[in-house]
Length: 173
Image (cartoon, rainbow, N blue to C red; front, side, top):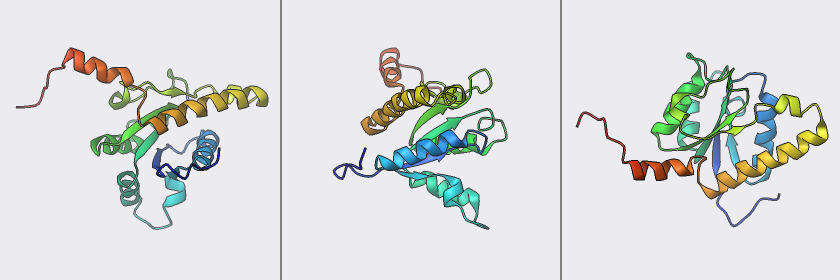
């Protein structure tokens, strides 16, 4: 789809763990760009000898929203992606989780557990049949674009539950 000149261009931060899912991440990156989004991803934005932590922080703060690609590598305990997710949430950014590997191999972090993710974990199986993959991918991309453009995350009903249940505030106050 060509870029819509009437809508403001949003910058999307990609939180990605540098693993063997790059083919899928790059495909989504290209398609978001085709649909008028600017995408910040570290391997395109951070140059040699630059302070990568500062660059990632700046990328997060200058983005409107984020897609967090979940894999065993990205959610490991000492991984940078968990820090990115924490900073994104702390700065009030919407984070849209995308599962790239089966949940038995990759447990989404607790900070995103209330959000329904887009499940792309079977992309490697699907890609073996180009026709099936293209149809499946087109449907998944449509879902992602609809959510990004609506400004809503995948947890629309969670906000309703919070209002009805009125959860207790456990701060020190």
